[in-house]
Amino acid sequence: MKKIYLLLFIAGLFFACVPEDHVLEIEIVNNTSQPVKDIKILTAGDRVSFAADVLPAGQDIAHTLQVKSNIADGKYTFRFTRSNGEQELVQGTYLEEGEGYLKKTLLFSIQEQAVNVDQKVLEVK
Image 1: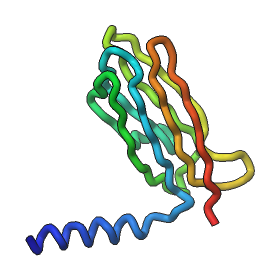
Image 2: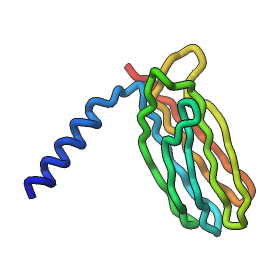
Image 3: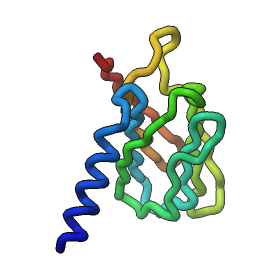
Image 4: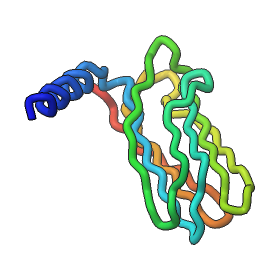
């Protein structure tokens, strides 16, 4: 039992040290009738920041990424494979031009024929 508390304490300490201005929150929603697989989000010079093997139909995944300031280029690539083997690729940016780092939430909504990307921006003070 003491090991669990120690592990939780260390994890809490780690996340307390993450600078707020280098946080990227992502949510991926599969709004199709088939699972998608080989999901990857690449940031900061094509570094794999998030990966998942499969996302079942109607399910979603949420994750918080730390994007290091010294290698951040502000760009992301979201890619996955549909159940028919077709690969999808969406690229964009998570930084506001000229404004520096912002805490941002990216919502990837996988549809039958497209991928919608919504962004929510919260300025870090």
